[in-house]
Every structure is written in structure tokens, then in C-alpha cells.
Amino acid sequence: MKKLATLISAAVLSASFSTTASAQDTMAMVVSTLNNPFFVTMKEGAEAKAKELGYNLIVLDSQNDPSKELSNVEDLTVRGVKAILINPTDSDAVSNAIRMANRSNIPVLTLDRGASRGEVVSHIASDNVAGGEMAGKYIMEKVGEKARVIQLEGIAGTSAARERGQGFMQAVDTYKMDLLSSQPADFDRTKGLNVMENLLAANPDVQAVFAQNDEMALGALRAVQASGKDILIVGFDGTEDGLAAVKRGMLGATIAQQPSLIGALGVETAVKVLKGESVEKSIPVPLKVITE
Image (cartoon, rainbow, N blue to C red; front, side, top):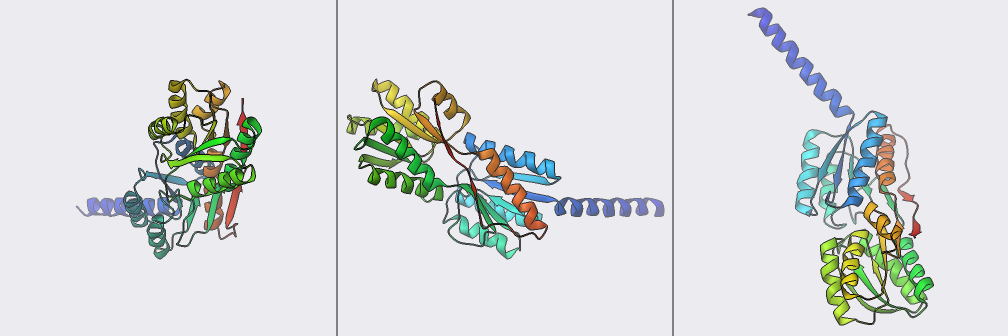
């Protein structure tokens, strides 16, 4: 009996040590939604880099729900992860989740979308303002100044939607385009289709569309094809489906981000923070216009 008790005690001690050791090299990634190919690629980039650097990476899906995002972060603070990479569902709403991590002294890094409040050690993202402006400039080059354009906006409240819209509006002003309408389709392909159908009916003379991500651009493409009109469509992200549509000449262009690199840089930066190294407050990831 004594021998059995000793063995049980040793097993418990071993399990306890194993859990502690795991916690020391575990970080987490909270993604706005894994129902979007862009964020799946970002996750894969982070996972590959974490494996390369010898860290465990927990990935949780917020399903575009700020309350789910908050509960995900709460769960991670209980688990005792050493760092949290978060891709916010909403730049304002995420602040509560970030503050929760701050209170637990867990460093937070934001990916692709920023946060309005809370302490963030580093933000890794493309220059969305520049990207929106690049899309507008491309439309001007193809259609000409004073082009009649429509914009499909992403999820209201996200920094990506706000900044891409800001950059595009700068191009609209610079090139004196006629913005016929600008409406949200929430970065969603089906909503992109539905919103574009309504906008086409209301604006039959539109010449070009800027969609703030490739999913909405592909939805808009279906609506345009069904209408039989010849309308230039420009997306944003450079997802696999978006790039394929550009290659086939169906989308005019996409402003390509590098989601895998954003994820990888997020992990690399988190590791530096955990090692006590200084990191940049903002780390830009290059963009480029991809055409046929």
C-alpha cells in the first residue's frame, strides 16, 4: 500500500511538472473567424512558426462574436498562457478582452486589426490605408478620373474596414471619382452578392467596385456576372480564391496582403517579448497590387 501511495504521489508530481512545463512554452491565438480563408492562412502561418520555434500554440475561434472573444480570452487567462495574439472581431469591443489579459499580466499582440483601448505590446498588420488608396488608384488607371464607383465595406467597427475605407476615399477625392454608394457587406461573400445585387439595381451606370476584402469581391462578381454588365471589380487580401479569380480575368485586381507572414511575425514578436527583448509598437507587412 505504501509503495502504491508513493507511485501515485510520483505520478501526480510528474503530471504537475508536465503541466507547468507546458504552460511555460504555450502561447495562444484568438481569431475573429475561421470561416474566412484569410484568417485560416494567418493561423497556419502562426502555427508553422510556433512549431519551428518550439512553442505550443492554442488557437481559438471567436466566430465574429465579441462575447465569444471575451470568453476565449478569459479561458486563456485561466489556462495561464504566456502571450496572446488576438485578431479582433471589433476594435472597440476587444478592449475588454485585452484589459482582462492585462490584469493577468499576459502580453497581448494584435494581428491585422487593431484595438482602440487596452495595453498592446505590438500590432502586426498591413498598411490598410495605403492599400485602400492603391485600389482607388488602380481603378482610376483602368477606368479614368471621374469613374463611377461603388464601395463594399467590411464589418463596421473593425480597424481594417475603417482604414481601407479611409484610403479609398482619399483616392476618390484625389481622382475626383463619383462614389455612387458605399455600403457594408461585413467581409462576407453571400452578403457581398446580396448587397451588390441591390446596388446594381439602384446604380445601373456603375463602372467599378472596390470591395474591402476578396470574399465580398467574389460575391459582387456573381452579382455582376448575373447582370451581364462589364464592371471592374477590385478586392483586397490576396486570398487563394481571390488570386485565382484575378488570374482568370474575372476580378480586375486584388490588393494582396500576406496573412501567413502576419501570423508568423506575430509569433516571432511574441517570443521576443517573452524573452524580454524590445519590439516595435507597430510592425508593417508589405502590400502589392496583383493583376492578371
